[in-house]
Length: 183
Image (cartoon, rainbow, N blue to C red; front, side, top):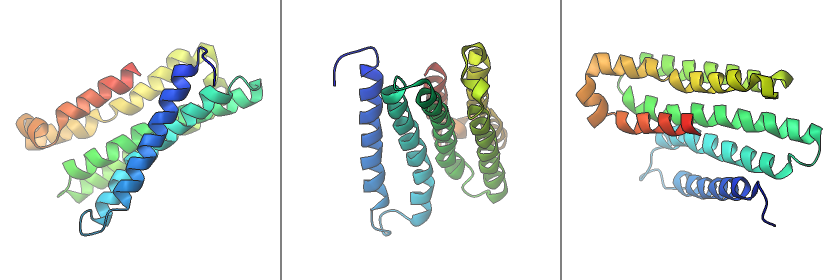
């Protein structure tokens, strides 16, 4: 509870964690006549990713100075949270973009889950957290996010660029990608 170099990281991630937790609880508690269970499941993937990402990050920035062992453990969880947020962010977009096309939807959701799991497994490796792997670490996370180019190009080729921006929220997807990469 004092001002130091981690104050902003701790408090912004803690408050974000609490905000997403509250929004998620409100959303999933809506009656089924307002929000169908399928939509609750789809958005829960995003909410879970955001809650875990911000929760792990808040915990990491709070306890990493405890000891080297504790710092390394929570650093790994922090990286896992980034992968979980990226995975969870794609699920709603894929669900609605390929709403009437079951095969592409299943393929692309499976693809992001596999790539995200690989990213998590890499994040759990001890070497991955060391400074000499900083560039590789960034490349792995950027690669995970840019894997969304594949379903995006599929959508654009099949439905057209106008539909991608006006019916499929491609502009918001691009903004998400820019913000995630910048982060």
